Amino acid sequence: MKVLHTIAALREALPQPGANAFVPTMGNLHEGHLSLVRQAKGHGLPVVASIFVNRLQFAPHEDFDRYPRTLVRDCELLESAGCDLVFAPDERELYPQPQTFKVQPDPALADILEGHFRPGFFTGVCTVVMKLFGCVRPQVAVFGKKDYQQLMVIRRMVEQFALPVTIEAGETERAASGLALSSRNGYLSDEERAKATELAAALKALGQAFVQSPERRAELEAQALAGLKARGWLPDYLTVRRRSDLGEAQAGDRELVALGAAKLGNTRLIDNVEL
Ligand code: PAF
Image 1 (tube, rainbow, N blue to C red):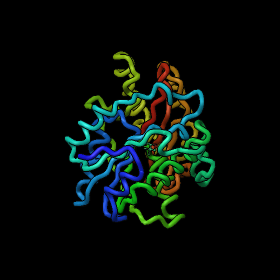
Image 2 (image 1 turned 90 degrees about the vertical axis):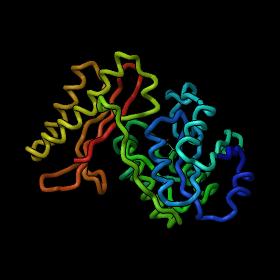
Image 3 (image 1 turned 60 degrees about the horizontal axis):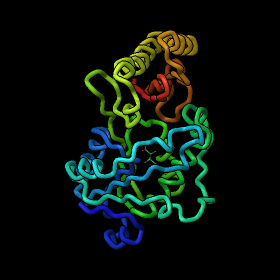
Image 4 (image 1 turned 135 degrees about the vertical axis):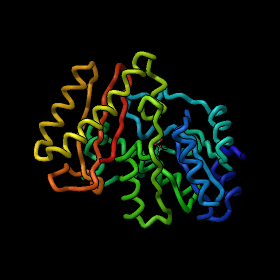
């Protein structure tokens, strides 16, 4: 497996555009990322993974500085999962000048939910993903459903800019306890890790309650929020949305997803459950 740090070296290694399958990451990898790599491998193309902690998608008060940088271990894991090439640029390589051209996603999709609580987050994500696509020029790129809204925003960006890449969704990997795997789980104490399963459980319960009484959506969401608060969490949202556009689910809607974000101690976790 090659590990390359510059765009020039990457271009040399991948002279033909559209001939690889790509998994973008911020490193600190876990089984969730590796399952995306194995999925990408299924296309029979060389698999490229990127590792880059993207400052543009972090607000000043967020965890950019303490986000774990674990390149050596990440590369070992990627190699074991069958990855062929790792692109791991540093900031000077990917942002040699301040990145003043940015991709501004549709506010209807990107200013709600995560975008409401993390203003500018999806502009940062779209900008780096557009840039990484320009560097890697993949045929297929795989994004995890764990970041459900991110996956949708990227799909829309690719459609609207007619980018020559197919976006594929990877299923969320979970620990036996039900906790969705996430790099940020590493911030949790043992006690918090045990408690963290409550978020997925609350989303499941909310989804089931909505299916029983869809006309009570707002009340059920408020109850779910209050329930997590009572258990010591600081929830941002727990809500049932249409999968197609993340609009608020109404009675009669099908293809739904319950999404949530909440802080446990200093760690903000997100999760979702398709209904
Ligand atoms: O999901 C992530 O890890 C990041 O948002 C991504 C897609 C690699 C962009 O920095």
